[in-house]
Image (cartoon, rainbow, N blue to C red; front, side):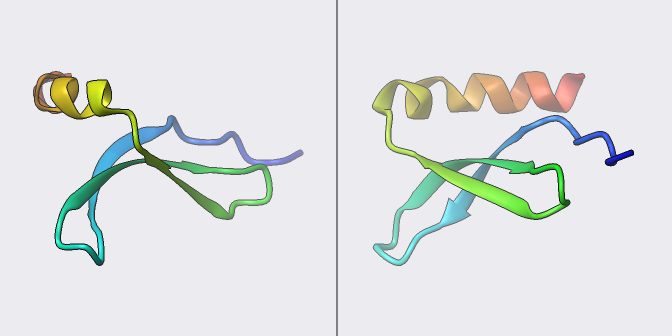
Length: 57
């Protein structure tokens, strides 16, 4: 039975251009880390609110 994947986390990661990028960090069924860079500007605008909610929960 494969392990149950942990929930997807939203994280800021440093990027080579000098700007931080937002990324979804998750695990696939075999346990490998998957990082998907988010290029949607709307997500960047609401990220501070999401991080506050994540901290409170």
